[in-house]
Length: 307
Image (cartoon, rainbow, N blue to C red; front, side, top):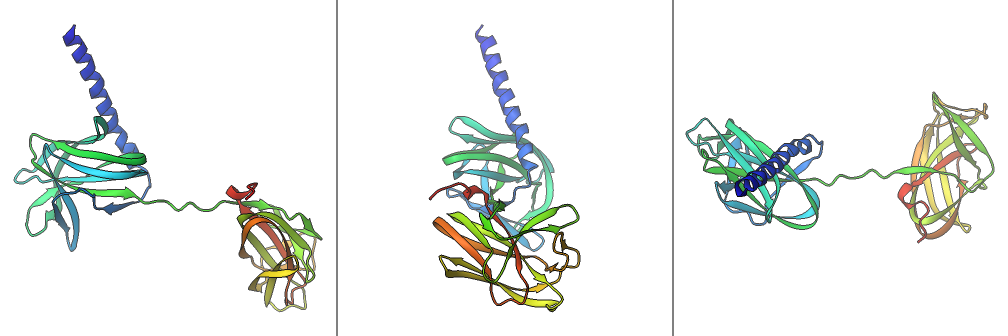
């Protein structure tokens, strides 16, 4: 009965290890970018050489451990190379533990690579990588290797680079405007709002947030093919911002309901909105263009927030 229980326990543990070993390959296929770093509690290090390049690796003795302190959430990549010595190839198991929990592991078979131990002609093993996720908070991991053929390993540590999330903007309609027009494209018609020298478009917004302004100057027969323009932003009659540009006629686009006017190529401006509610008025400033056509987008994650 005791033997049966021990066999069952061994089978469960073995299955868990296999799942962990196989699961690392899913992380490896991601397109995440990693940056090498020095573990705070790393011991001896060596340089491995590839042509003129040298890479720092940390020494791991078989049966011993390297400890790694990490603050999550993040992802870690461990690159291992076996010190094969006089043998041509060898097998080993690599383990990552947090306390008594096996976090990641890998069975690896290695043969000699082109890299050499700096200052020698000794070729080290091919790179074998292992990946694991680090949840939020501070964690300490122990990394060890087991092998009947290899006594020493070289480890290089990488941490996933933080990706810069692109800010998401969504369409934002002015609460007051004099005239709306449509810009014809190959796929659709896009609404724009006309700005004259005395105004014509007002925007109500709650900050802090950021507004993306899409602006096109209009051309009629009296305006040169290249023309300066300025879009003024006012709050309570006071000028708070002025955006300028040089307009050129668009060769492919047209206003659907303004046949006598030609839109310019697109200009994008950004307006930072401080805390609180604001009403902005947009005016054409010192521009030969008959009017300016504008539309707006707002940072999606700030929409609807009152601060």
